[in-house]
Length: 274
Image (cartoon, rainbow, N blue to C red; front, side, top):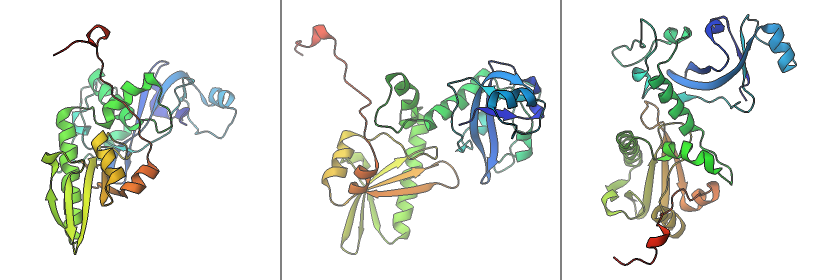
């Protein structure tokens, strides 16, 4: 859990601030972590608070607000890095002709505009969707947007990129691929090869965590169709998407399914006729 960070560039940070940690990882800019600052202290103060002197030598140490500590992650920001703005004369990162960012630009600490902070907050919340057997109600709204309830335009682009990636993968493997997405069968593609046939449902995810929304029809297909396969494409909009492929049996064994929507009917209308 990230409970502390240190560095000379942190001298402008104050208690109550939120610090976003952005790094250069595997060839792209990534969101590494977040710390909600409880206290700004020096090396000795941090050592006393944390009970260890095995700390980075720096004049500025940030201690996380108790209860807000979170694990580190590596969430690609290639889809939004051009949209980030800062409260400074140089208010954005410079991109090259390939829309890439020079890693040296992120070595300087910058203050995000509220709109840009909200972008990172949303991305972070989406990647933090809980995976346990129970989901606290007060967390459900926060992460549900990242599992398919985000902006419609981005969701569409993620899904299209995932279907394209899976179609090309099957084609390279020698399969003939037909899209049946418009028929709403509980799967998107029918793939045939040498007498074999697979009914393939495709899920696209913008981040690295293979969690997603699945409809009741799709879940039923996974349970009842012997030729059902689920292909989850993570980092779908990046230059390095990853394919996670499961048979229906493997999917049901590896995943927990949680109901996240209900039809709400006013009590006085329950007996109404239409």
